[in-house]
Image 1 (tube, one colour):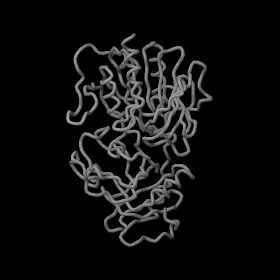
Image 2 (cartoon, one colour; image 1 turned 180 degrees about the vertical axis):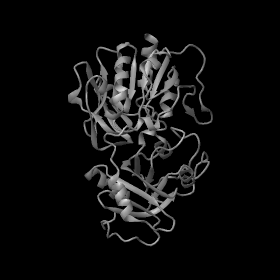
Image 3 (cartoon, one colour; image 1 turned 90 degrees about the vertical axis):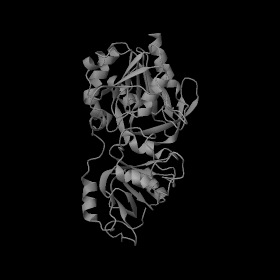
Image 4 (cartoon, helix red, strand yellow; image 1 turned 120 degrees about the vertical axis):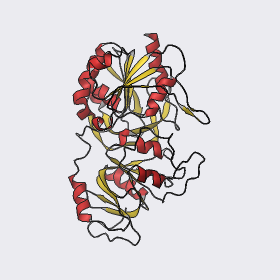
Length: 390
C-alpha cells in the first residue's frame, strides 16, 4: 500500500485506477475491466488458480477481492469455469496487469470478461502490503474505481467508503438466490468430455436450498448419485416438503448468517424434525449451527483460499480445503447434541459439526472445490449414502 495517506496521496503519472479505504488510505494503480466505482469489503484470497470461479462465487457478493498470487488472468476466461451465471464479487485487485491469455480453453481475455460483466479491476497495487494491512487491521471497507482519464473525486470516494454499512447484519442471500424452483442435471466437468450427465436409474432426491450456491456443489451431488432440485433461499417448509425430498442440502452464500437466519432458521428446525438427512456447506453450516442454538460471529479477516488445512477430529487426518467465509460458528455455544468434527489448523476455529440425535452434519469449507483440492469429496458420498440407507 502507498505510504502516503489520504488526502495527501498524489496521483502518480499513468494511474487510471484507485482504491480508497474508509480509513483514508489510498492505493493507486491501473484500472481494467469496467469503468466506474464499487464499494464493499476488501478481502484477500490466497488461491493460485480459479480466479474466474472465485469471481462468480455468490459468497463473494459485497466484496472486493485482493489476489495474493501476482499473475492473475494468464488463462483468460471461458463459459465453463464459472460458478454462477454472472460474477458476484464487486471487483479485483491484482499485482500485475492481466496479460493476453495463454490457454487453449480461453475464449476471451480477463479484462474483456470483466468489462462485459461490469466488474472493476485494479492492477499495479502492492498486494502483499495490502494483504498485510488486512491481516493486521481486519477486512476494511473500501471503494475501487477505474477512470481512463485518471480523474477521481477522492472526497466522494472516501465518503462512499465510510458510508457503506459493512457485511455484519447484512442479508445478501436474498440478492443472489435463484428466484424459482428448478432441477439440476449435470455432473462434474472432465477435460475433453464436458459435463457428465446424470446417468440412468433411480436416484435419491435432494432438495437444495440456494442461499447463494456454487454450481459445482450440485454437480458433485449428482456425481455422487443424487437427483437434485433447487429452491430459493426463502422457500418455506411446506414448499420444500411438497417436492418429497429424501434429504435436504443447505448451500453456501454471502452475508451475515444471523441476518439470513431470521427466515432460514425456523425452516431448518422444521426440516430437522422430519429426521431426513441434512448436509450444509459454509453459510449452510452456520445456519445449521444457529438452528440448534449456537451463535456465529464476524471474523477479523476471514478465511479465503484454496490451501486451508483442516483437521478431521474423528481420525486426525488433515484435509487441504478451499474456504471462503467471513463469519464463524462459536464452538463454545454449540449445544450438547452438536459435536465438533473439523477444526481449522490456521486459527483453531470451528470447521464442521454433526448432530448426535439426528442425521445432520455440515462443514465450514468447500468440499466441491475443483479444480483444486479434492480431499473432502467423501462428504458428498457420505450424504448420498445416508439417503440410500434411509
